[in-house]
Length: 265
Image (cartoon, rainbow, N blue to C red):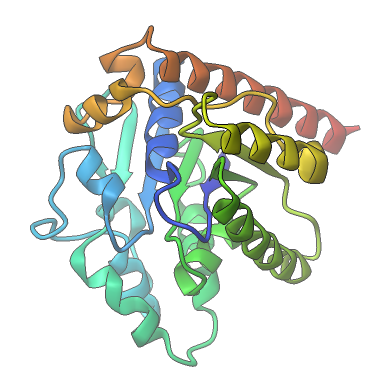
């Protein structure tokens, strides 16, 4: 089972869109895929047509059980989407209370990791949508994943957010005792404004080793697909953004294969 987290300490950069579309593409290829909505805003939950106000059980209940020292049943919290082999562990409204409830309780940084170990044989891929703020929920996403994707808009405010994210990643690396592979993914990219081209140039100069060579372009079909509760490959498979996400997935699968070969050598 491969676990990919999508995270950035800045909102509005395409995290949820990236999770939904990579997950949809993986399911189309025949993989069994679980998406986990760790963001209290519940954007991923809403993307697939679930209302966080009415969902009875979700990822929050893993933390509730951990705080109460009960053994959770993560499989009971999963909801199938209407796409074959694509499931969701949704966010519920109470997820917003986790940071306050956590307090000084130890061990809550590994709640998702421990839950995934119970489901290891059920899924080929798990994609986690992380909240845009540093706290126990983001720490859970980073502690549980094998690979981190950092979506980033091409503007200079996003560059500042990236630096904060990389500092957080360095902290997680010290805890994990090994570097977490990560990939910076330019999203919502518009080649016309000079600031976008300049930001991409700075990213290449500073972070070229971890920067995807492609971009996810601005595309009205992305918003339309989310309103239709469908990944792009099911809504507009030939649009520019859909093709870009397909290219991103090929890159990630190639990286994963290289990592597996290196580990077994």
